[in-house]
Length: 193
Image (cartoon, rainbow, N blue to C red; front, side, top):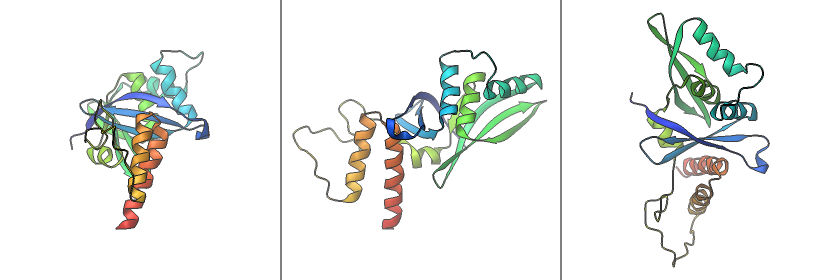
C-alpha cells in the first residue's frame, strides 16, 4: 500500500478542550489536514522536541529513542494506518539486525518518537480520505467552488449546517472543533443510510 507523507502543521487547543490538544498533520503533496486529538503530555513531548528544548531529564519518548539506538535498531518511519470507531492507530516501523518489524502505537507517541529520530510520518490513504479535512485556499471554498461574497448561503438541511460549521472551524484554524464536526458529519451521514 502506498502511504501519504505528512508533516506536522501544528498543535492547537481551545479553552473548552479539557486539556486536550489537536495535533494537525498536513499532506506534503496535497492540501488536506488531519487533526488528531491527543493528551497534554503527548502534545508537550512533541512541542519540546520541535522547539529543540532539552528537559533536565530524559522524557519517555527520549528513553524510547535511546533504547532503539542502544540495541542497534533504526526507526524507518511511522504510519497512521487505521481509524476505527473514532480512534486512530499507528505503527512504528523499524529495522533491527537486517529484519524489518513494527510496533503498535498511539499516533501521538509515534509522532513524538518520529520528531526525535527525524523519521518520516505517513498516513494510510483510506484514513486520510475518511478523516482528512481539505484546507481552504485563497478564494476557494472547501468544496472547491469559488467564494461568492454577495450570496450568503442559507443551509437547508442539518447536514449542510454541519458542513458550513466545519468550513468555518477550518478557516479559523480551530482544528479540534473541526475534528469533532467531521465526526458529527460522518455519524449523521451513517444515520441517513
